[in-house]
Length: 125
Image (cartoon, rainbow, N blue to C red):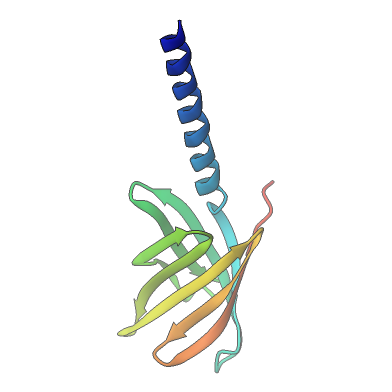
């Protein structure tokens, strides 16, 4: 009887642990409006779509002006911190930021230049 109780407790603990992990991962998934501020040509706005993939996360970028529509080459989220990069016109562009509830504050780095980045989660219908 004691052995059955221990097995039951292990199953319950594992179930709670995996449910907690799924909830944590899903908190980042969805559509996020982004703004990159203080660029030489003004602010850049668009949509960042975060999705779960087999090996972690995937990030897709769509600019509001239609000039950009691509997947980031690297996108990772760990301990509420987003890191990623992609290449544009031969330059590596690094993206970093920290999630805080329904927002992310961070930077976009191009060579030696850094620009403020803000993401705001789109409301679900």
